[in-house]
Length: 190
Image: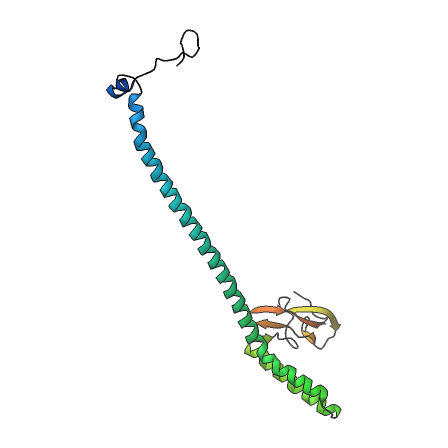
């Protein structure tokens, strides 16, 4: 305790157990209040331990769910790839047969045309369609012009030649068609 006049600490007289029991001393009731505080502390420690255990279990559960999701994603990707690649395996087999075949130029050409038809059928099975080109009006959303051919026979910006076929899956463009378009000087482009 501090002396109010000097600001120095002073010693209090020692108390006997009977004085404390009698409650004649200030703060004696404080000692009796520590017992419930100790019980509360033990309860809080128990709750903390339960929460830490629950947290550890939730973290393990989250890690397991994350690993399971990664495995399911990999399995789904593999399944999708296998279903996509399967139709093209027979196309590859036919190309290998064509390379080993002894035949005339016409027979080889006929064989390659059949393989190309088989490839187009495989793409159709995957909902991949070619972009319309020759005879269509130039559309910058699906065509890429590599040049123009000056002509008066065809309307301006009509696709005259397909250099590389473009493809779309349903309405989504996979790649644009490379084309040459008509440039008709007699018509004014809008």
